[in-house]
Length: 114
Image (tube, rainbow, N blue to C red; front, side, top):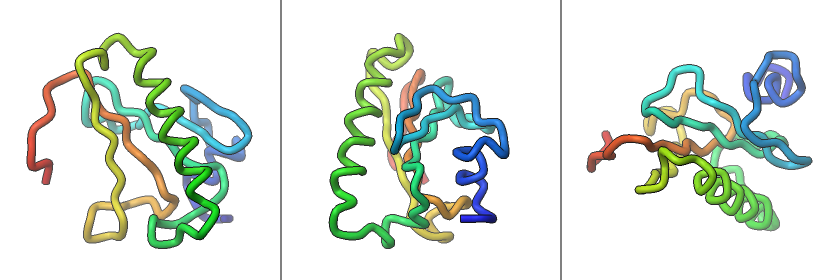
C-alpha cells in the first residue's frame, strides 16, 4: 500500500534494520521500544488489521508466530519469557494500519497491560 509506513519499510523506501527477513515476513526493532527487547513482526503483504485476515492467511500468520518463537529463543534477554501482542483498530492502540505483532521482553511484564 502506497502510504503505509510498514510497506515503505518492507520496500526499502524507509530503512528498517531487519532482525529477520524472508519472502513473506519482516521483523525489525521498534523505534520507540516499550521493553528492553521490542521487535515488530509483519507480513510483507499489506493486511491492515486482524479483521482483514482472509481464509488462507492462517498459513502466513502461523509461519510468522513460529518465526517469532525462533527469534525469541535466540535472544538471551528473553530466556525467562516474552510477550507477543497485537492490536486491532484505533481504540485498541493500533497506530499503523498494517497488521503487526510486538515481541516484548527483557523485563517482568505486568497484567493487565492497559
